[in-house]
Image 1 (cartoon, one colour):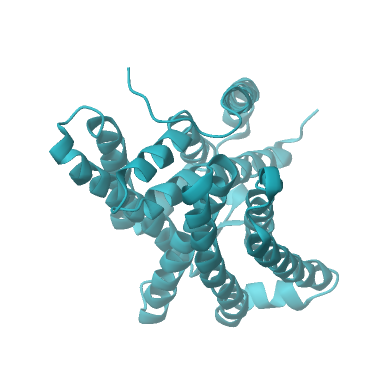
Image 2: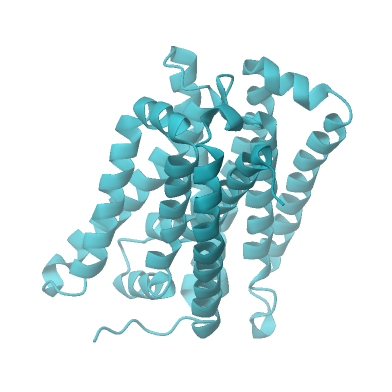
Amino acid sequence: MILDNQLPIIFAGLMAFSVLVYAILDGYDLGVGLLMPMDNESQRDKMIASIGPFWDANETWLVLAIGLLLVAFPAAHNVIFKALYLPAAILLISLILRGVSFDFRAKVIAEHKNRWDRVFKIGSLGSAASQGYMLGMFVMGFETTFVAVAFSLLSAVGVTMAYALIGACWLIMKTEEQLQVRAIAWARKAGFISFIGIFAVCLINPLINDAVFARWTQLPWAYFFGLIPLLCFGFFVIGYYTLKRLPLKDDSGCWLPFVLCTCIFTFSFIGLALSFYPYVVPGEITIWQAASAPESLRFILYGALVVIPCIFAYTLFSYRVFWGKVRNLEYY
């Protein structure tokens, strides 16, 4: 029997899981959009083909996360989106641009195809940067001071480069020949900047948040939070030497950079989430204060236990069907 005070924890976990899966899955297809080279149409076509079967489904996890926030934590939803109205609007507009350009590039005359590819690239940049900015504002407790805005802009750059990194790693796994070689070079550059960004967040976050500093330095939490940067550093080192050796004969190991990047995303997210637990609005509202009535949460949980496994199963099925190297782009 689930107790009433356990329901907010369950929904916080489901929402966190949805956000993490979205960051990984939609992160790589946003990264692919960011990296699209305007000097090579055939490579752009292959990059679009590599994400074509997945990108719509990847965004489902964002819808799920926002839906869970709305129905399970309505008080926090109001505060968060009131503070993030402008970047959320930019995110929505950018996602619309991506969807429109994805379809229009296949239907317009050849002379206009480049224009829609640029729109897709701009939409990817706007989506990634706005998400990074919103993450920075969350860390800063939705303050509007100069320091908070500056940190949020730094976070926007960091998340954008992290998405470029995982997008490049996806292309290494899914493509061959010159595009794969080019993706390896992109991954090296984006990986270096992403490493600096994660290091900066690990340094700045406890300095500007007293509660985070206290949690990071108190035993036994200090052991755990000290382990996360060390693991991420190890993943970056392994990734660096892996990228130096790729591509290998028979394309072996092409999957390793993407797996390492997924691990970096996962541990970074876990560290960030636990730094602010149990607050859904840092320093102001806990998950229990923001939660809907227990009766509502119980009713919603029945639906979530059906919907979330279905989404997860469909995601696994689609990746299983379209596993392997990308083929040439075809429209029907």
